[in-house]
Image (cartoon, rainbow, N blue to C red; front, top):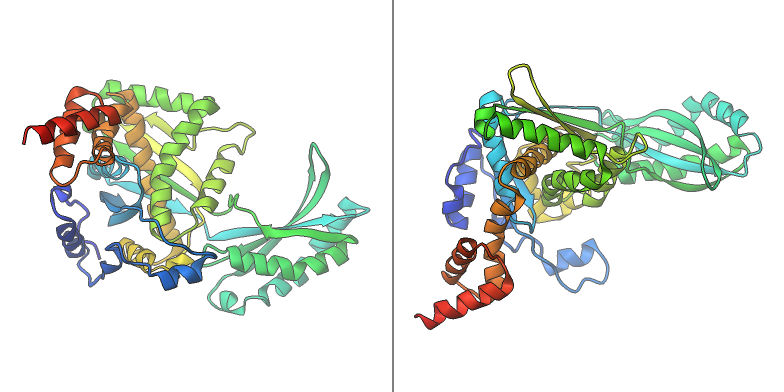
Amino acid sequence: MTTTSRLSGLRNLTIAQRRASVVDAIGADIDLSDLEGRGLGDDQADRMIENVIGQIGIPVGVATNLIVNGREVIVPMATEEPSVVAASSNIARMARSTGGVFATSTEPIMQAQIQLLDVADPHGARARLIEAKDEILTLADEQDPRLVEIGGGARDLLVRTVHGLLDDHLVVHLVVNVGDAMGANAVNTMAEAIAPRLAEIAGGRSLLRILTNLADLRLTRVRVVIRPEEIGGEEVVANMVLGANLAYDDPYRAATHNKGIMNGISAVVLATGNDTRAVEAGAHAYAARDGQYRALSRFERDAEGNLVATLELPMAVGLVGGATKSHPAARAAVALTEATTARELAEIVTAIGLVQNVAAVRALAAEGIQRGHMGLHARNVAVAAGAAGDEVDAVAAALVERRAVRADVAETVLAELRAGR
């Protein structure tokens, strides 16, 4: 069990020292060697996807300072974007005095859709399908007895008539508790098995039989409270609320606001070997559930003037199946979180999304997004210009000092540095 996630000064250590510090904080025998840039061999990669020609590395950092539901958590994040890990850790630190992040989540419910065509009486068919619900659920459960054995399985059958711009549709939803899996394979297998019987009952034929990534029955909700003195004062809090309100009302702002949320979420989802595309699709679809694309998070001030930020979205992640088991680095990252259920992992992922979002909105409401972001980005620009070793920090510092984090300036600074040696 992690004793503390408050690892001050981690950035000043070597990579090896950071790994040792993280393992010490967790207080358990966790092997992080698979995160040392050699976690996935060519043979393993060749079995994961087709036509493998190599691999691409993404840095894995750890967000520190986070408390979720009273538990200290160190969170792995795989991302190429500077400032995301640092910003998340900083807001998590500010929230510690008020208890950190509070999270709740629903059961791990996924849905499969079966499209039925050529049905003469859609409303009559809907009634017949609902009448046969018990039969259909039993048939679905027969496809995955192991899932049923551990407490999961088919839970409900919903029938929708969708009146669209292009056509009218009869769609059956199979509702399944998928346990600690993301659940795509389980629900897809069930959908394909029950489709012929559904078509027979409806008097038509089935076409599409696949899960929906709008997992709106599998929601995670998180909340954080931050005192004004921690985050920059009452004016900053007031401006953060005003900025977040624009994101709720304006889809142009909402797209970037939600991208900031996903900067945190996708980094943890990727690190743990889960499906980033599924999570992102579900989140953005949920953001438009009332017909307009809106911010996923809400910002308010409570009676004491504290900032209260909340976030709710579908979070379909798992601890079993897929790359979470087949990728060594993903296994190490999952172990790092100490999550014991898919719901607990979902709450950790969503908590990081919220603190990252708070960090971005704070930067916009205070000094502007570029100050902190470009300071960290300067190192990338320095490397791209050809800097190596101790030259990287020297060139980056010069770029920040000149307020010109650009490739051409980096090349000039590097030439000057080398000429002076």
